[in-house]
Image (cartoon, rainbow, N blue to C red):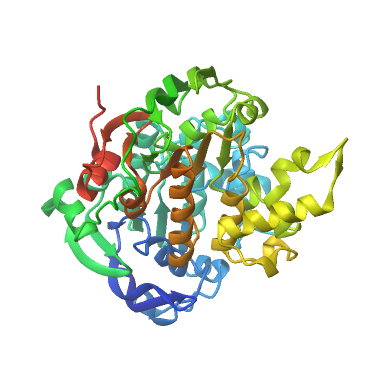
Length: 498
């Protein structure tokens, strides 16, 4: 098989921490090559280097045997490398044709409509969208069809390598089958495909070859036919991490502070049930699209279609009502602190006290002294330096920004349940340990702590009880007896629990 794209000795570090180390592999023409590894293994960094988003620190990338300088997305596109990211970049308000032309460096300044429609029609036919009119608004298509349009756009750019990053993470089985068929057609015409996915059964069914990364290094490159889900998990995990013991054992006299019965979000979460004690940390383990994040957002009142019954300390928790959820004692830490959490241009002090302003004044007037004392107390509790209180929060590191976000929820008598979605996303090792201590202290103070994560180490280190989800359904529950291989199997290849 002719090598279409090769990497040799590739390495990349961030702030002195290696993300990819001495990586070498090739993707052949017509080959569907999987890149696997649990979160933090280095897959995203490899994808960014190959697609021109970041340069390698060292090593060599070649396309059809020639050295490739991928200094930008445009440079990568000129060499025939196209990325279909896990976050769709299509524009629903535009037509299918307009979306295919977006970002195409070869698109003419003056659009010749007849030629553009013919070109669009040919590409759509190639990936199985014969029934789709190029003039149809993208908003009228299903999510799976939009994903296919994104793939079609990559093909229309004369791609020699198509990189697909979690293309089926949020798709139904029927929509996924459409994408798989399109990928096989792409490979059949001689295009190389690099396929990144956490769904291991899907990887083994679709791909020809599998390269496994762990801690930024290549562990193995193996023909897919020689692997099983079990052996692939073993390659990905190596020595499995172990759960750290809770600070103190659970109190058997504590009742269930949080009761969730038959929580349902159409198309995302089905019949989720959980009872949780105050003082314990509950982990929801699942990959993107598993439903773990949807549990938290529904409890926080952020899913307008959520149904079910939820009680917090024997009081009904209103669904579909974020203000009502907050008043009932729910504090939610989103997985996107910049868009859904922090006021980036405001000071650290202002961000820390932003959700408790009524308690810091009288008749709507904030008392500066009381505000300052509250900010100092929260900074100390959260492990933030007092001299940074007057700095804009955007000047902090990712770890310290996350401490501000979590710290805002602490020390409040009106908070009874702390919900966190990916609590240490984008946080370095030191910040991660500090945030874990904050969550443990919150549980020790009597809160119900419920978090969702895709990180095996975090799940095992922090979760007193771990619930695994896949495709919107519960797969398993583990009360201190989970291991990394079991969690990975549940999250990627599990059979729904009854």
